[in-house]
Amino acid sequence: MKIFEEIESEVQSYARSFPRVFHKAQGSYLYDEEGTQYLDFLAGAGTLNYGHNNPILKQRLVDYIVEDGITHGLDLHTKAKGEFLETFKECILDPRQLEYRMQFTGPTGTNAIEAAMKLARNVTGRENIITFTNGFHGCSLGALAATGNAHHRGVAGTSLGGVTRVPFDGYLGDDIETTEYLDKVLTDTSSGVDLPAAVLVETVQGEGGINAASLKWLKNLEAVCKKHQVLLIVDDIQAGCGRTGTFFSFEPAGIKPDIVTLSKSISGYGLPFAIVLFKPELDQWKPGEHNGTFRGNNLAFVTAKAALETYWRDDAFAEQVRLKGQYIEDRLNAVVEELGEGTFSVRGRGMMRGINCVSGEFASQVTRACFKRHLMIETSGAEDQVVKFLCPLTITQEELKQGLDIVEQAIREVCAKTDDMPEERHYFDENYDIAV
Ligand SMILES: *Cc1c(COP(=O)(O)O)cnc(C)c1O
Image (tube, rainbow, N blue to C red):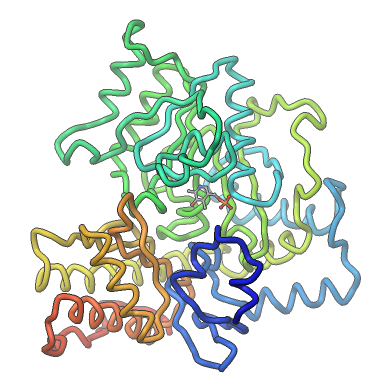
């Protein structure tokens, strides 16, 4: 359609990878104007964990709108907000013995990061924040300073300061424990690294190439923070809300961050919504100090509450995510073993997975070959060398198998491997006890 070229800015990104005009969506599928169906393994870059237009969430939203529920109320107490807070406490915080205050920020992830960094700096009276190689935290200036990606940083147009970058887990090879380096520079008063207010980390780096920190590394990181009285901020904007197989991505590491940011899938429905959680003693904001017109999206409160009640009252849904994650890992490992041992590798945790194709050109040929087969899937990483799997967590067994078959066929095509997939790859046996 000509209008997009005519007046939409060149800043478009995802639209370039999938040049169609999309019109409808349901569950794991998007549909273009002609009605062609596409299986969606991008899912709003992790924003649609419960699928497109999830029917349960949609019904609650429609009922709320029809009854003239409040859509915008600044930060007024509303019934929808109160019910969301109660449900979040009951379904998420209490069962995990977490005690956090909740701040509603502007509705995007980068707004939550700005608030988290500002809070940490003000509470500690220190400026520096430790961030990690290949980290991604958003594109507004504070969050951008914490982001590694040169393409994004390059257009800041002003200096990006107040952070010190240290190597993420695995950055210097499997044998080097990079938290020891952090401990060392924070201990040495002449290291040149100022004592920071906080350490800001993703447990699984999404945009940075699906790099999963080991649980041990996360534990060590928390210990280093405690030792030096530095706050630990976990950016769970992409890895949270169940993506890795638990509601918060840090749960299996047994750590309790001081501050947590959530956005992307927290509304459950793709509605803009972001929150910051912090330990009660950190709640040192004065009234209105960090203001904003769109703090707390009431429509998102309604769908977020519905999502929590539907999927997070017990562990059954999370267990399904772990099983599907295992299936994805096994399928990708089989591909690597056959086609790419020594070159390709499988990355990630739970249903946040990637296959590292080493070359960005190879990975983009794979995603293009997938799109020809009506599968939408994107790349990430410094060279866009990682094909990343972010399909809805609610995806059915059949859809998941279909998507992985397409990716494998695409990889075989790009490898110029024309013979068919091995027969055993078509399994989806009882090892994966996935409820359809
Ligand atoms: C997407 C993302 C952000 C930024 O969120 P926006 O809504 O795009 O501003 C921050 N951190 C992580 C880990 C993300 O994946």
